[in-house]
Length: 220
Ligand SMILES: C[S@@+](CC[C@H](N)C(=O)[O-])C[C@H]1O[C@@H](n2cnc3c(N)ncnc32)[C@H](O)[C@@H]1O
Image 1 (cartoon, protein in one colour):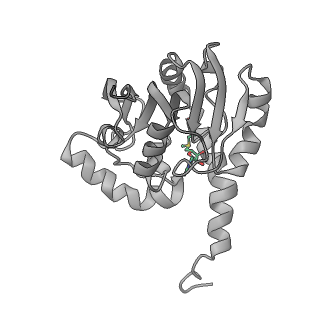
Image 2: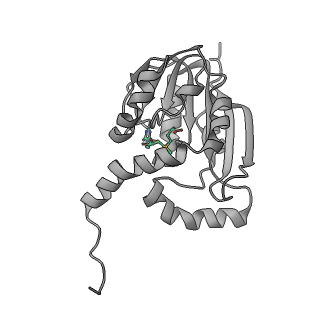
Image 3: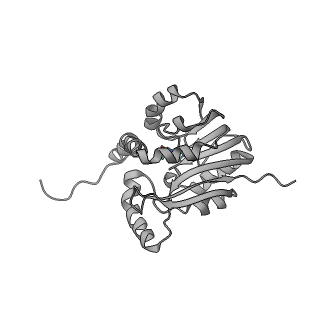
């Protein structure tokens, strides 16, 4: 048969996003090169912790005993189903905390920490999600994160912009988010930030931002 292919139907797009993409992301996110990073990012977590983009629960092995509970925000039912065995085996209780980090029902000033690992790239209004994180953290609470994002060189940024056209429908994420600027715009104060190219990944997707940002203590 020749001629143009029929346009993809909404059902095909939904089946891909709901069934196939979470499985592909789980496989990508299990990359052994990420284990050490997850360990570093989770090391300082304490108390009650909000996890934006809980995914398939891959951070559980890295959560220190000082974490009392994980409030999981995750839209993908498939990812949550895939997380079930990891969640059942984990010593940390998991509380379902909604499906959209852009808008949650969580109370103000409640949480000791929040964590985001490779999630800011895929939230449509990530500024709104980070404003939610800032809202629900207690003063002095902090967001620990590792994200891929905007590269320092214009040459790589151009490639990131070009690849966004493929990466967004395929992986559901953008390659060129300016993570430090987004975190700062949410009113969080950067405490540590390490920006680097991971040697195991192409530069367009391997420019990582790893760090911790704090909600300032309220003015007296
Ligand atoms: C690349 S995966 C990373 C998953 C997990 N954080 C990890 O490190 O393995 C991105 C996750 O963000 C989730 N996500 C997308 N939009 C979201 C939203 N609006 N609120 C919360 N999570 C979202 C996706 O469903 C997906 O599970």
